[in-house]
Amino acid sequence: MTTEINPGEQIRRLLKSWWIIAICMLVCGMAGYVVHTLRPPLYEAKATFNVWLDFNFLKTDREFTEYDEDLSINTVGDSYVMPAVIQHVTDEALKRGWIKAPNEIFLNYRLERKHSGWELRYLSTNPQIAMDMTNYWATAGYQYQMELENSASIPAYVRFSEPTLAVLPSQPVRYGRNNLILAGALIGLVIGILLSGRLSRKEK
Image (cartoon, rainbow, N blue to C red; front, side, top):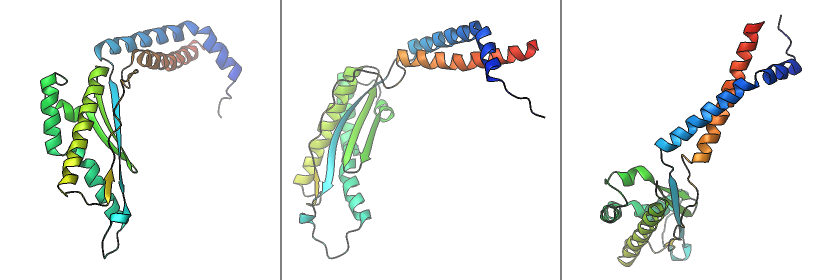
């Protein structure tokens, strides 16, 4: 036989144990602030560019499939992360003090395709560095694409745009103080409700 749950009684129990919930929220919220002091917030800058196909310049006797389209677009889009570009950006970033070790660049960047659009993102604890790094990388990638085009290494039917450079990020995307405190308080709320329910059952 199951015990019938009385919502009103449950609410009264929670109100009676409000201090437990409040303490849990306060403690966990403070824990969130401590995490913020230990993990600096991360800022993300984003540059965008486009790669598309102009079929007016496509000359082929065979069927041009969707696979061929994706391969052509991805090959040109991925030129932003070709070894020559990566090395050039890494050398400049080390020179300017944007990074301290070469592997940092691999840990903090992301190149993502969204249909014909591409997004180059870079994370840093310093919003200025995030923007400067992204924009330098985007410019270097575009220059490399231009070199490929001038040397006829890119098919004539594949077109690409000049990148739209990143702006200075104003809000962190990870480990922001307010977000961590709020997350801690919400966790404390859940813990407080569970504790108050457990204590009320023991009192019966």
